[in-house]
Length: 262
Length: 314
Ligand SMILES: Nc1ncnc2c1ncn2[C@@H]1O[C@H](COP(=O)(O)OP(=O)(O)OP(=O)(O)O)[C@@H](O)[C@H]1O
Ligand SMILES: [Mg+2]
Image 1 (cartoon, rainbow over the protein chains, first blue to last red):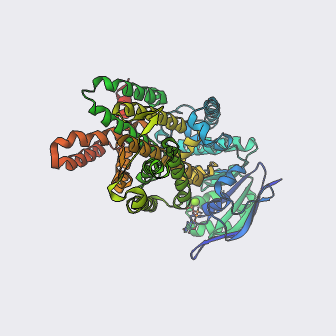
Image 2 (spheres, protein in one colour):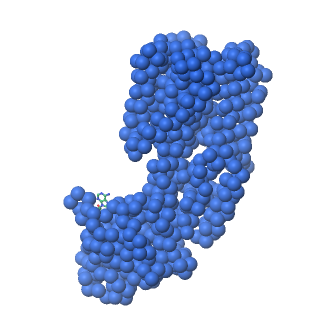
Image 3 (cartoon, rainbow over the protein chains, first blue to last red):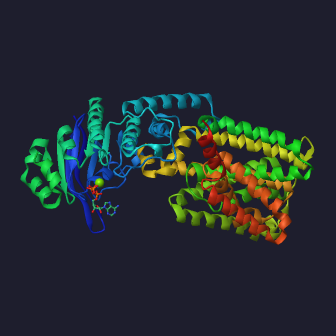
């Protein structure tokens, strides 16, 4: 079954065509990776799928439903969650509160009961906290739950964002460079975590520069360059695609080109 | 220690204790009046903190809603023969309706733009109050008929001390409950990242509007209380300086902290009284104290004090 379909998506900012005629489909429960050099339009594509930008052309279908142009909070309600390349942590809150925010849609949100502090609200707070605790345990962050979020290391903050996204119980999880800034040990743990999430039936689309990460974990890979699709296929096929190799050799560091060739 | 200090029961318990115990140390009846003024300002500050501290927005025109509440209980009974109690609710309703109507377009603005838009709103309300002399008595102000309960007129400072103290306790309890709910978490989340909040499913525009309306309601109630207590009101109550004073209470006490808003109100209401001995240097001294507090206690009084205690504790 297909969960996400992007049809001829395009958006431009002034003269810059950041995403240009991009189409792809993601099967339910799979890990789909998007790679490409800096400025290729990967984050912009995520911003389109998560409703932060409205596309100039094309459509987005989620489980067959046209969700193009819906605002982010409506898309969240439809089961799209994401993390951010440049962290968007709620620094004024504790670690566990960050994840509790992710339960927003599962919570009673009427104003009057909240202000009166009715027993139902107290009960709900307890349930939300319990669930958030479970999620933090799942992402491996259940030790410092009541500390301010800012006390966490960079790698832990990335996990915290994943935890917050999972709290939504999403169908589709978008991860924008989850391994950026992580050391090799953290990256290895992250690969395990992403696999675990996918095993629970969550469809994952991820953007990543770490080629080993991408090649190990992905069911399919999409290569963007200058906003356009360069290639799409299995990791094997993409790795051997001469255009991809050329693009990486031409404009990107030799390090990644080395990974791309295996 | 951290848990105890941040518990809402600690804040609420301390507040009740202070309200109950203060009269024991009052040397004269005059102190009831000052304390009642503190409680009344604190009600408005606690409300504004929901908008500014929880949700991270800014309003430089909040005294406008204070003015609406004040003039509702002045104009309603005097010109239309309406019951004063009813007029308190009319003021709240008017303030909430205006906040909702105006909030929808202006809360899309951010930062400086929102500040200027709310500033404009405050000016507009103060201007109407000053210019519609036929209704409001103009810049010279107007008398406010006293509130009565079972035939007794409420005008003694002692009476108002307990009324405003009770109202503040209630307002504080509601604000603290809100902070610890899904709605409160949504407000604090959008404070830090609107994008991440939206992607967690939070309707950001709706929640900002909620916070704005709640803050307007608190201010309106405080305005009604002040007018009924003083028996007289001028458009200055809705003016720019009052708006800035409210913001200063929230910030000096510690933005985001409900207890801080009350402490800030206490400081900004009592300091001018204490500093009055310096006669013409009063304003300078006040300004200096506020600056020094902000330089040394950057997060505001209450959060800074809390950090100090947590660090000292074993
Ligand atoms: N809001 C915006 N306004 C103007 N230009 C934008 C905006 N967002 C993205 N762009 C431009 O679109 C292009 C694609 O940017 P994007 O952030 O999507 O790249 P990316 O593939 O995520 O790169 P990186 O690997 O560095 O994260 C860039 O040229 C960028 O400057
Ligand atoms: Mg990017």
